[in-house]
Each structure stands twice: as C-alpha cells, then as structure tokens.
Image (cartoon, rainbow, N blue to C red; front, side, top):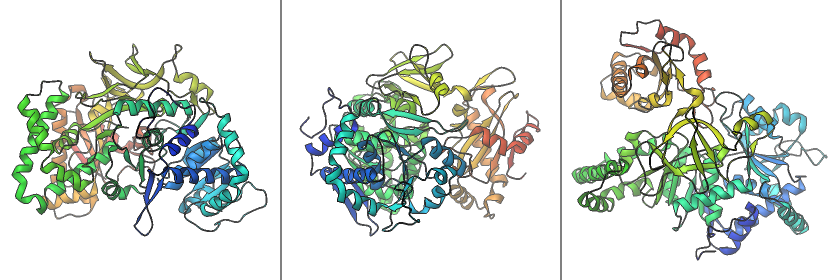
Length: 628
C-alpha cells in the first residue's frame, strides 16, 4: 500500500471484492461516492459506508435467490444504486450487465434474453418496458425498482419473480446480513481471476449486439495499467456521466476508482453534466468527442460574455501562445524556451478563470475516447489550457489498450500501448492487440468468439491503422466500413466525415460511395445552432424544414464541404450532399447507444434521397434540402 491508500503496481488482487475490501479498510473515512439528492444537497458515502451498502445489497440479492454464476441486469442512470448493485453482484459471485436506457424494444429484448438475469434493477419509469418483455414474462426474474418505497407490481409466493423496491431490498439485506455474512465471504473466496465480473453488450452497428465477457483479471489489469500510465499520484476525482453500459465509464468510475481509492460523483442525467463538473471539480475527466464539443461551445459563450469583455485582448494573447505551444508539441517539434515559459504563464492567467467557470480548473488529465476528436476542437481546448489526451480500445480489450502519455501526444495518434499490451498491424492493415485485459470472448456465441482471435492469439480489432517510427498508433477506419469505389479506390468514410461533421450548425455526416463512381453525403443539423445562424444572417424562415432548404444555409454548407474537399484526394471528395431536417437518434435506430452510425439503417431509410443525389450530374455542384 502507498501512503494515500492506493495499491502499488506490483500486486494485483485476484478479484474485485478483495480489492474493494482492502481499499475500504485502508481509507475508511475518505469520500468514495457522492451524488445530488432530490433536494439539491450533496450526499457522500465514505469508503467504509460504501462497502456496508454494497454488502447489504449483496445480502438482499441472496435473499432473492441469486446463485453463483447468475446475472444481475441494471437498467438505470449513473446513480449510487447502480454502482452498488453492480458491485454487490460480484460479491455474490455473480456477474452484472448494465443496460442502455435508450435501447429500442427489440434491442432490449435481445440483451435481456441473452443475459438471462435472475434479478433486474430498474428505474421506475422503465418498469413497464421491462415487465412487458417476452423473456421477463416467461422467466419471472426479480424486479427491483429504484426510487420507490413500496413495490410497484403485484407479488407472488415463489420467491423469484417477486418485484420489490430498492428500499425493501436494503431493509431485507440489512436485517439478514449477520446470517448471510458467512455465505457472502464464501462466495468471495470461491471467485477466481478468470470468472466473469460483467457482460458488456457491443453497439451492434452491423447486427445484434454481442455480450463481451470481462473477467476480474481483465478489469483489474486495465485499472492498474491506466493508473500506471496516468500516474494518479494526485487525488482521483471523477464524474460518472457516460452510461455505465459503456466500458470506458466502467473503467474510470468503478475499476480505476476502486484501484486508486478515488472519489466518484454520480451524474445520472447527462443534461446535468456541467452542474456535476462544477460541483465536483474532477481531477480526471474523460468523455466522448460530442461532450467535449459542447464544453468547447460553452467556453466560447463564456469568453464572449460581459465577464471577459474588458480583458478580451489579454485572453486572445494567452490563447494564441497556448495554441502555438500545442501545435509544436503534437508535431514533435522543439518548443522554444520563450514559447514554453510564456505558455506556463498563460496557463496561470485568464484561461484558468475560464476553466474554473466550466469546473475544469482542477483537471490534471483530460481524455477523449470512443471516437475521433476533431482537430479544431483539440486546438481550441488547448488554447484555454486543456490538453486532451487520446486513447483507443474496445469493449473486447476491457477498455483502453492504447493511450497518449503525459506530454507525448502526436497529431493524429492515439498513443502507445498500455502496460502489458502489444500492438501489431496485419498484412491487410488491421490493428491487432494482445494483452492481459483482452476478453475471453462473447457470451453464448462460440463461432464469434473463435473469429475474434487469430490462431496465434491476437485480438482482431476490425480497425485499420498504422504505427509510426516511435511506436505510436494511428487509426484510419473500420475494416468493414472501408468503401471501394467503382474505380477500385479504397475510401475511409470516417476520415471524410470528420472534416464535415460538427462544423458550425452541422451535426453528423455519413458518406455513401460503395461501388459508386463518386461520393455523396447525408448531413444532419444541430437545430439550435442552425437557428442562431439564421438569426445572424437575417433569414426570416424559422422552421427547421424551411431552413434546410434555404439558399443561404445550403451555400454555407457548400463552403464547408468545399473546405473539406480541399483536404481530400479526388476519389474521396464529396460531389453532392443532402441536408436533413430530422436528426439521427438512438431511439429511432440510426445510432447505436454509443452514438455510432448504423450505416445500413440510415442507407435504407434514405435510399430515395441517395438515389436522387446520384441522379444528378457528377460534374455539377449539388446540394438539396430535405424533401426536395
């Protein structure tokens, strides 16, 4: 043990419950988990109380008949009950499954049916969705509803299939804990490092989602490796805001949080993220590109407010020097002493006030993952003193397998292999990984598990990339998404789409070009940003449907596309585009729960619009608004 209670890197406990017990004994009075109560006040559990809560939940689960090897499903936001239920399952030698709340009914039915949970913990407003699933009706798992004092569904006398509330579960667990303590200890003692701790279901961009098996060994190794790479010698404070069904959020909020004995703040509603960040002042903050884009937009609004009006020149000068330093660093160029010292002073100046107003002034390490970050967003954040570190991994690798190191970023790179990981590039360009946190495979899918690995044991990522002379990894695209034009040219869609999506009032972009003579694009808009653009340009139309057909709007989009095309080879360039009024959403099926494009779904929904784009002359500039 180190002086602050965090574990030394040499010894990894066999299982998460062992680590949890050791950490709570090492720093019982230190804050472990916080959240905002319904009255707006903040509640906090220290490590001793946090473990007591988990043990009471575990006892309650045993009273409901949870057996070793069973599964507990959790359909809830990032609240303390979610994390407690997740950890309690492992204390019963069971596995957890966190389920995205945004899943469509058929997707939800697939995940629940495949996971086959003995117990389901669910938000009150989702009880009806769960109770109506075919698998639930047939198998009658116990339903634990959050946020209610009494049962919300009729009970029966079977013991299993008895709905109850979280309050009743805790009361039952506390009342019988003394009788069940030996059984819980026995369950923990029988756990082995290669026993499953959780099943995380993939996004399902090309078919039904698959349940990735992650073991105690997998998650503890990745937690240790990330703590080693990030050098968490400072107080670890993190906001749990991404869905717990996302492997990255589980890594930061649960596994790393326990490994270093940190302090996690639960944010169950993404709309309250800024408030949560301002309350908790995280020292580590990781999120997806879209969240960083919104935080950048918030920073722009702050800097344009009256609070900074009198110091605009000072702010611009400091931002200029910070952006210059960032560009030199990521290009592996020498940073002159004058630039380096000026940047250090700039970080202590007015930009720190911008960071403080965002709640990010205490961040020691800021990271992005799950998708590529636009370079202009990277540069903007660097100009206000927030240097973003990139990382790469899959659900199948237990989270991060490659990451930037402090001060070692390179333009376009996602960094170096995590501790214990190796990276190689196959003959066809596929990135392949080997490491201790690699999954043992997929639940109930023997063939898919066999296809996941090469004969010599390397995990096939399905991504294409390359390594530079320093061993840093660069991601080009998804192997299955590489398009081949009618002329036989390979086109990486995300490389093209990243130059257009998120620009001004544009939201997302999807290009089409497989087997075609040229590339076209479908573009969606951010309604709020589009309204702001229309107001600034004196456009009288107010409905989104009218605005996406307005000549001024279409001309602005064309200029964005032209700027992108200037950076692309001729086969990659977008010849025509369609501007859509309706956003792509998880609920309507165009996006996965992790906001990845379901290309096949979008292509089918927009088939007529795509054909209309290809019916236009290739040589002409062409843009159409929705419903044209």
